[in-house]
Length: 264
Image 1 (tube, rainbow, N blue to C red):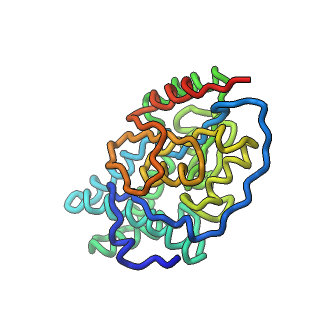
Image 2: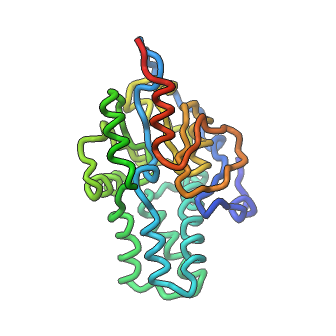
């Protein structure tokens, strides 16, 4: 599958947007698992249903007030555009590296000075992320129900563990999975397969919880029951693969788990 320049210039949805790359890689071999239970037994989270990214882009607007909104939007777009381009071109660079490259490009394109100090502050903002207010209580409810929890994110493990520490969420997650393990990014099937391998469950028993519409579509393409926690009220993507449930906070996931509780 070839991706042309026009495809990437069409990136939308607040800069965190979608591009079908499922054809870029061959079908992955599913882990063979056998379960005596039905229903949802585990939840795999993208990073941002748990961590609030708004302070990162608020800092952009503080440092570059004349072009803040444009800077934030372009930076977000280029981050994910670079992940997909690198997967399609077999030129992997981890998520931290893609963030840095996208930041340098954005400053150059907007003709603003990216000083070493500003670059460090903006990059380190990703290591200072904290959880949304409803997260800890929701995670505790899931743990009380015996649900296994894990991250399945493009973020590096260092970034994910930083967010866990910042938020006081140590002990809640059974797995902290970065797609870096497979040297790829979502929505590549190999990225979603990491959740199946870690939980050792059929994908039908793992609820994937997405922040972006493109990730919700990718998870459905893969075969996960999918909940889209659309915290920033993004427009729905036109990609097929509609999520099973959509809501603005983790209450939608808790309700979905109640409806699909594990039974013997």
